[in-house]
Image (tube, rainbow, N blue to C red; front, side, top):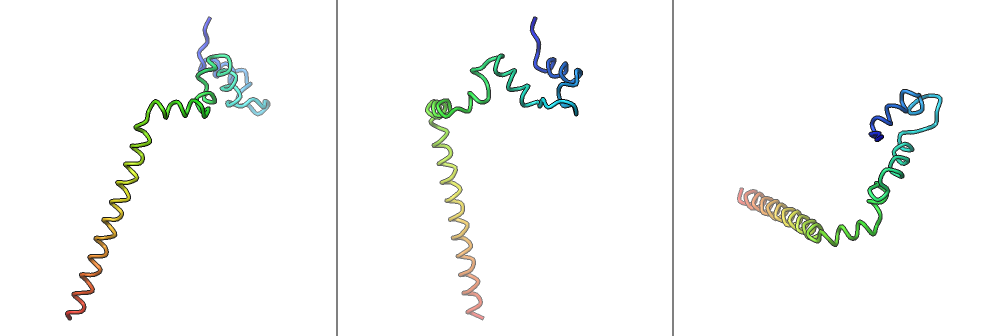
Length: 99
C-alpha cells in the first residue's frame, strides 16, 4: 500500500494532529519525517549541502560566466548613462554661457 504525501497530511489534519490548537506538531516536522523515510537522498537538506552545490557549479560552468557577463553589461550601461548625463550637463552649460 502506498500513501501519497497529500493523503498523509489530510489524514493528520482530520485526526487533529496537524495544525490544531491541541497539538504541537507542525507541518515542517511532518515534511521532515516524510523526507527522512521517503527518499533521503532527495531531501531539501541534502540538496543544499555545500558539496552538492559545488558539484552543480562544476557541472554548469556557464552559470558563473553568465553572471559575470550580466554584471559587466550592467556596468557598461551605467557608465554610458553617466557619460550621456555628463554630455547633457556640458551642453546645458555651453548654451547658458552663450546667452
